[in-house]
Image (cartoon, rainbow, N blue to C red):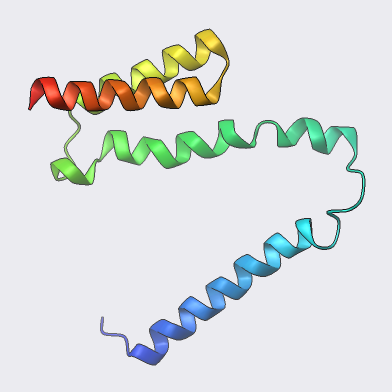
Length: 109
């Protein structure tokens, strides 16, 4: 399918406007109000819900290997999960996964 430059820019502008309006609804309209305790408690789970959705495709179908899973990314994911469960700290889990990934890529070539 071939799209014109105008169609592509229209989609970009509409998606940008939609993203802005979604964020405005939370930050601009209710950002200065106290949120209910239930909402605050549920917002703590946002990283736990978002990070696996971002990382899973990169582990299961990595573009760097042509979509084939590999040992380095699998071990990095396992290290991140293990450190995350042990420490309950997202930053340490991310760092453990990154160090494991780069270490294994160096070792395995």
